[in-house]
Image (cartoon, rainbow, N blue to C red; front, side, top):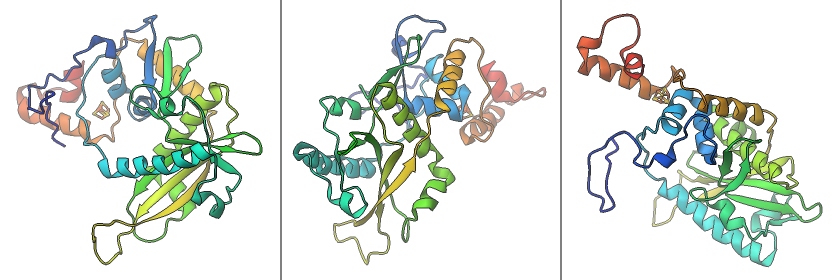
Length: 285
Ligand code: SF4
Protein backbone atom coordinates (compact mmCIF):
# COMPACT_ATOMS: atom_id res chain seq x y z
CA UNK A 1 0.00 0.00 0.00
CA UNK A 2 1.03 3.64 -0.39
CA UNK A 3 1.66 5.25 3.01
CA UNK A 4 2.40 8.98 3.01
CA UNK A 5 4.26 10.49 5.96
CA UNK A 6 2.27 13.32 7.54
CA UNK A 7 2.95 15.87 10.25
CA UNK A 8 0.71 16.61 13.24
CA UNK A 9 -1.49 18.81 11.00
CA UNK A 10 -1.98 15.81 8.69
CA UNK A 11 0.01 17.54 5.93
CA UNK A 12 2.20 15.28 3.75
CA UNK A 13 5.90 15.78 4.58
CA UNK A 14 9.07 14.22 3.21
CA UNK A 15 9.57 10.64 4.38
CA UNK A 16 13.11 9.78 5.46
CA UNK A 17 12.69 6.04 6.04
CA UNK A 18 14.36 6.28 9.45
CA UNK A 19 12.97 6.98 12.90
CA UNK A 20 13.48 10.47 14.27
CA UNK A 21 14.06 9.33 17.88
CA UNK A 22 17.27 7.41 18.52
CA UNK A 23 15.81 6.02 21.74
CA UNK A 24 13.35 3.92 19.73
CA UNK A 25 16.26 1.79 18.46
CA UNK A 26 18.32 -0.76 20.34
CA UNK A 27 22.12 -0.59 20.33
CA UNK A 28 23.75 -4.04 20.38
CA UNK A 29 24.77 -4.96 23.94
CA UNK A 30 23.21 -1.86 25.45
CA UNK A 31 22.71 -2.06 29.22
CA UNK A 32 19.64 0.13 29.71
CA UNK A 33 16.09 -1.16 29.43
CA UNK A 34 14.47 -1.62 26.05
CA UNK A 35 10.88 -2.74 25.47
CA UNK A 36 9.88 -5.31 22.88
CA UNK A 37 6.15 -5.59 22.31
CA UNK A 38 4.22 -8.69 21.39
CA UNK A 39 3.78 -7.30 17.88
CA UNK A 40 7.54 -6.81 17.44
CA UNK A 41 8.20 -10.33 18.75
CA UNK A 42 5.76 -11.64 16.13
CA UNK A 43 7.66 -9.65 13.49
CA UNK A 44 10.85 -11.36 14.66
CA UNK A 45 9.20 -14.75 14.13
CA UNK A 46 8.05 -13.79 10.63
CA UNK A 47 11.13 -12.00 9.33
CA UNK A 48 14.35 -11.52 11.27
CA UNK A 49 15.65 -8.99 8.81
CA UNK A 50 12.68 -6.64 9.04
CA UNK A 51 12.71 -6.95 12.83
CA UNK A 52 16.42 -6.09 12.93
CA UNK A 53 16.13 -3.18 10.50
CA UNK A 54 13.27 -1.77 12.55
CA UNK A 55 14.42 -2.34 16.14
CA UNK A 56 18.21 -2.10 15.78
CA UNK A 57 18.89 -0.08 12.62
CA UNK A 58 16.02 2.34 13.26
CA UNK A 59 14.33 2.09 9.86
CA UNK A 60 10.77 3.37 9.76
CA UNK A 61 8.67 0.84 7.81
CA UNK A 62 5.44 1.84 6.01
CA UNK A 63 2.40 1.55 8.27
CA UNK A 64 -1.07 0.16 7.74
CA UNK A 65 -4.34 2.05 8.17
CA UNK A 66 -6.11 1.74 11.54
CA UNK A 67 -8.73 -0.98 11.79
CA UNK A 68 -11.40 1.34 13.11
CA UNK A 69 -14.36 -1.05 12.75
CA UNK A 70 -12.51 -3.81 14.61
CA UNK A 71 -11.35 -1.31 17.22
CA UNK A 72 -14.96 -0.25 17.70
CA UNK A 73 -16.12 -3.77 18.51
CA UNK A 74 -13.22 -4.02 20.97
CA UNK A 75 -14.17 -0.71 22.55
CA UNK A 76 -17.84 -1.66 22.94
CA UNK A 77 -16.99 -5.10 24.29
CA UNK A 78 -14.68 -3.46 26.80
CA UNK A 79 -17.60 -1.36 28.05
CA UNK A 80 -19.79 -4.46 28.47
CA UNK A 81 -17.10 -6.40 30.29
CA UNK A 82 -16.12 -3.45 32.45
CA UNK A 83 -19.73 -3.19 33.62
CA UNK A 84 -19.59 -6.84 34.72
CA UNK A 85 -16.10 -6.32 36.16
CA UNK A 86 -17.31 -3.51 38.34
CA UNK A 87 -20.24 -5.57 39.62
CA UNK A 88 -18.23 -8.85 39.63
CA UNK A 89 -20.96 -10.69 37.76
CA UNK A 90 -20.70 -13.12 34.81
CA UNK A 91 -21.08 -11.58 31.35
CA UNK A 92 -24.20 -12.60 29.36
CA UNK A 93 -22.05 -14.89 27.16
CA UNK A 94 -20.58 -16.82 30.08
CA UNK A 95 -23.51 -18.99 31.12
CA UNK A 96 -24.38 -20.10 27.59
CA UNK A 97 -20.72 -21.09 27.07
CA UNK A 98 -20.27 -23.07 30.27
CA UNK A 99 -18.42 -20.25 32.00
CA UNK A 100 -21.04 -19.35 34.60
CA UNK A 101 -18.32 -19.61 37.25
CA UNK A 102 -16.24 -16.82 35.65
CA UNK A 103 -16.23 -13.04 36.00
CA UNK A 104 -14.07 -10.38 34.36
CA UNK A 105 -10.91 -10.06 36.47
CA UNK A 106 -10.89 -6.99 38.67
CA UNK A 107 -7.36 -5.65 39.21
CA UNK A 108 -6.11 -2.07 39.67
CA UNK A 109 -3.62 -2.53 36.80
CA UNK A 110 -6.24 -3.72 34.31
CA UNK A 111 -6.30 -0.49 32.28
CA UNK A 112 -2.51 -0.45 32.09
CA UNK A 113 -2.41 -4.07 31.00
CA UNK A 114 -4.86 -3.29 28.19
CA UNK A 115 -2.84 -0.29 27.04
CA UNK A 116 -0.74 -1.81 24.27
CA UNK A 117 0.83 1.50 23.21
CA UNK A 118 2.20 2.74 26.51
CA UNK A 119 2.15 -0.12 28.99
CA UNK A 120 0.67 -3.62 28.67
CA UNK A 121 1.62 -6.73 30.60
CA UNK A 122 5.36 -6.48 31.30
CA UNK A 123 8.06 -9.03 32.00
CA UNK A 124 11.83 -8.62 32.06
CA UNK A 125 13.59 -11.34 30.07
CA UNK A 126 16.05 -13.05 32.42
CA UNK A 127 18.88 -10.66 33.36
CA UNK A 128 18.79 -8.79 30.05
CA UNK A 129 17.66 -5.18 29.53
CA UNK A 130 14.79 -6.53 27.40
CA UNK A 131 11.32 -5.99 28.79
CA UNK A 132 8.62 -7.92 26.98
CA UNK A 133 5.24 -6.20 26.77
CA UNK A 134 1.78 -7.11 25.49
CA UNK A 135 -1.53 -5.26 25.60
CA UNK A 136 -4.10 -7.91 26.46
CA UNK A 137 -7.76 -7.42 25.48
CA UNK A 138 -9.20 -8.88 28.66
CA UNK A 139 -8.64 -11.28 31.53
CA UNK A 140 -11.40 -13.31 33.14
CA UNK A 141 -11.24 -15.17 36.42
CA UNK A 142 -12.53 -18.53 37.61
CA UNK A 143 -14.30 -17.61 40.84
CA UNK A 144 -13.76 -21.13 42.26
CA UNK A 145 -10.03 -21.55 41.70
CA UNK A 146 -9.04 -17.87 41.21
CA UNK A 147 -7.15 -18.91 38.07
CA UNK A 148 -7.04 -16.37 35.24
CA UNK A 149 -8.19 -16.82 31.65
CA UNK A 150 -6.40 -14.84 28.96
CA UNK A 151 -8.92 -13.39 26.48
CA UNK A 152 -8.57 -11.88 23.05
CA UNK A 153 -11.40 -10.18 21.16
CA UNK A 154 -11.47 -10.81 17.41
CA UNK A 155 -13.73 -9.27 14.78
CA UNK A 156 -14.24 -10.67 11.32
CA UNK A 157 -16.81 -11.03 8.55
CA UNK A 158 -17.30 -14.47 7.09
CA UNK A 159 -20.30 -16.23 5.60
CA UNK A 160 -21.99 -18.89 7.66
CA UNK A 161 -21.29 -20.31 11.06
CA UNK A 162 -17.85 -20.19 12.70
CA UNK A 163 -16.64 -23.70 13.45
CA UNK A 164 -14.40 -23.49 16.52
CA UNK A 165 -11.91 -26.13 15.38
CA UNK A 166 -11.69 -24.67 11.87
CA UNK A 167 -11.09 -21.28 13.46
CA UNK A 168 -8.09 -22.59 15.38
CA UNK A 169 -6.78 -24.67 12.45
CA UNK A 170 -6.88 -21.78 9.96
CA UNK A 171 -3.25 -21.00 8.99
CA UNK A 172 -4.19 -17.30 8.91
CA UNK A 173 -4.93 -17.58 12.64
CA UNK A 174 -1.53 -19.00 13.62
CA UNK A 175 -0.51 -15.51 14.68
CA UNK A 176 -3.54 -15.32 16.99
CA UNK A 177 -2.39 -18.42 18.85
CA UNK A 178 1.13 -17.02 19.13
CA UNK A 179 -0.42 -13.87 20.56
CA UNK A 180 -2.32 -15.88 23.17
CA UNK A 181 0.76 -18.00 24.05
CA UNK A 182 2.73 -14.80 24.54
CA UNK A 183 0.16 -13.12 26.80
CA UNK A 184 -0.13 -16.27 28.91
CA UNK A 185 3.67 -16.40 29.14
CA UNK A 186 3.81 -12.81 30.36
CA UNK A 187 0.98 -13.18 32.84
CA UNK A 188 2.43 -16.41 34.27
CA UNK A 189 5.88 -14.81 34.45
CA UNK A 190 4.35 -11.94 36.40
CA UNK A 191 3.37 -14.45 39.06
CA UNK A 192 -0.30 -15.09 38.25
CA UNK A 193 -1.92 -18.50 38.16
CA UNK A 194 -3.08 -18.76 34.55
CA UNK A 195 -5.67 -21.35 33.51
CA UNK A 196 -4.45 -23.63 30.68
CA UNK A 197 -7.44 -22.59 28.57
CA UNK A 198 -7.61 -19.13 27.03
CA UNK A 199 -10.51 -17.74 25.00
CA UNK A 200 -11.00 -15.94 21.73
CA UNK A 201 -14.23 -13.95 21.71
CA UNK A 202 -14.99 -13.93 17.99
CA UNK A 203 -17.50 -11.40 16.64
CA UNK A 204 -18.52 -12.46 13.14
CA UNK A 205 -20.36 -9.83 11.08
CA UNK A 206 -23.30 -11.34 9.20
CA UNK A 207 -22.97 -10.85 5.47
CA UNK A 208 -26.30 -12.43 4.56
CA UNK A 209 -28.56 -9.76 6.09
CA UNK A 210 -30.92 -8.16 3.55
CA UNK A 211 -29.38 -4.70 3.85
CA UNK A 212 -27.34 -2.39 6.02
CA UNK A 213 -30.19 -0.31 7.59
CA UNK A 214 -27.62 1.54 9.76
CA UNK A 215 -26.85 -1.70 11.58
CA UNK A 216 -24.31 -4.45 11.17
CA UNK A 217 -25.26 -7.58 13.09
CA UNK A 218 -22.80 -10.04 14.54
CA UNK A 219 -22.79 -13.58 15.82
CA UNK A 220 -20.60 -14.15 18.85
CA UNK A 221 -18.51 -17.22 19.57
CA UNK A 222 -16.30 -18.10 22.48
CA UNK A 223 -13.49 -20.25 21.10
CA UNK A 224 -11.37 -22.04 23.73
CA UNK A 225 -7.68 -22.44 23.02
CA UNK A 226 -5.19 -24.35 25.18
CA UNK A 227 -2.18 -22.10 25.14
CA UNK A 228 1.38 -23.36 25.11
CA UNK A 229 4.27 -21.10 26.06
CA UNK A 230 7.00 -23.77 26.21
CA UNK A 231 8.57 -22.49 23.02
CA UNK A 232 8.68 -18.80 23.88
CA UNK A 233 11.71 -18.48 26.15
CA UNK A 234 14.15 -20.02 23.67
CA UNK A 235 12.75 -17.84 20.88
CA UNK A 236 13.22 -14.72 23.02
CA UNK A 237 16.81 -15.85 23.73
CA UNK A 238 17.28 -16.09 19.97
CA UNK A 239 15.74 -12.65 19.45
CA UNK A 240 18.01 -11.03 22.07
CA UNK A 241 21.08 -12.69 20.56
CA UNK A 242 20.05 -11.30 17.17
CA UNK A 243 19.64 -7.81 18.62
CA UNK A 244 23.18 -8.00 19.99
CA UNK A 245 24.77 -8.90 16.67
CA UNK A 246 25.99 -6.49 14.01
CA UNK A 247 25.14 -8.56 10.95
CA UNK A 248 21.87 -8.02 9.09
CA UNK A 249 19.99 -11.35 9.08
CA UNK A 250 18.27 -13.08 6.17
CA UNK A 251 14.87 -12.01 4.87
CA UNK A 252 11.73 -14.09 4.43
CA UNK A 253 11.61 -15.17 0.81
CA UNK A 254 7.80 -15.37 0.87
CA UNK A 255 7.47 -11.65 1.61
CA UNK A 256 5.82 -9.70 -1.21
CA UNK A 257 7.25 -6.41 0.09
CA UNK A 258 10.82 -7.59 -0.37
CA UNK A 259 10.01 -9.11 -3.74
CA UNK A 260 8.51 -5.78 -4.74
CA UNK A 261 11.56 -3.79 -3.60
CA UNK A 262 13.80 -6.25 -5.45
CA UNK A 263 11.87 -5.59 -8.66
CA UNK A 264 11.77 -1.88 -7.87
CA UNK A 265 15.56 -1.80 -7.53
CA UNK A 266 16.00 -3.66 -10.82
CA UNK A 267 13.72 -1.28 -12.71
CA UNK A 268 14.92 1.98 -11.16
CA UNK A 269 18.63 1.05 -10.98
CA UNK A 270 19.21 -1.23 -13.99
CA UNK A 271 22.91 -0.28 -13.94
CA UNK A 272 23.30 -2.22 -10.67
CA UNK A 273 21.53 -5.26 -12.07
CA UNK A 274 24.64 -7.41 -12.54
CA UNK A 275 26.10 -10.40 -10.73
CA UNK A 276 24.33 -13.25 -9.02
CA UNK A 277 23.18 -11.54 -5.82
CA UNK A 278 19.80 -9.91 -5.83
CA UNK A 279 19.85 -6.14 -6.36
CA UNK A 280 17.86 -5.54 -3.21
CA UNK A 281 20.17 -7.70 -1.15
CA UNK A 282 23.18 -5.76 -2.44
CA UNK A 283 21.46 -2.54 -1.48
CA UNK A 284 21.30 -3.79 2.10
CA UNK A 285 24.88 -5.08 2.29
S1 SF4 B 1 11.26 -10.02 3.67
FE1 SF4 B 1 11.99 -7.88 3.44
S2 SF4 B 1 10.21 -6.49 3.45
FE2 SF4 B 1 9.58 -8.57 4.07
S3 SF4 B 1 9.47 -8.47 6.20
FE3 SF4 B 1 11.53 -9.21 5.66
S4 SF4 B 1 12.94 -7.49 5.35
FE4 SF4 B 1 10.80 -6.77 5.53
